[in-house]
Image (cartoon, rainbow, N blue to C red; front, side, top):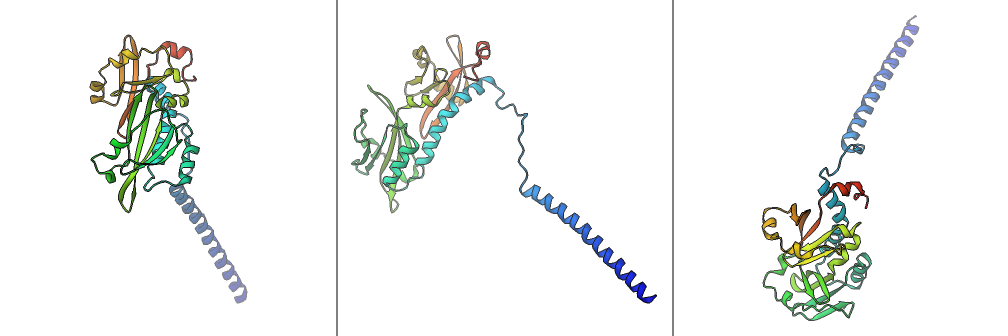
Length: 266
């Protein structure tokens, strides 16, 4: 009897231990999954999001975003320069941004070091940039748009150094009109430099003179985004800077005819 009682006791004890471990495993598993959900939550997609609710802003965003992405990508690429680029860097530049006109580098005395391509139609003298009186070590990039009989050209100028001393500039340039190639409906987008008089669009019938008569300085002093009228037509606009050059994206505000012809689909 004593032997049977011992066996029964051991069996009950073993069963109790198994129950405790089973409960512990369930609890541990729950804790593990809760912790995983907190540290590495499963991604969810909100299919109810309406996006940009304002139809004017939505239209402008659809038009200018692919254009602006090209500029942002280029300025980001150039921001990594700290010394004079090597041959591989120039190859990568043209590979990633085949739409640029060219690139050149000059030393601190404005002597040309590298120029690709070697010949260019639009004239440019780098002297005034190198003679800039500010501290190049505190500037990541300067930019400007030059106008000539051959058309506009935008220049992005990045300093390079050796042993922390300013040694010259890397200058990448392109025709801003080429940016319209990246717009899904270039005839609906206007790109302009408000203080330089440049207006570029795929709309051949745009009244550019009417745009130039607008007091953009007054509008831009108050906001970076808004709606204005040119004649009887409302236009929505957005201003932003490419380094220290201000540009604007503009398009006609949404009308009933736009909604009817499905302008959002282009």
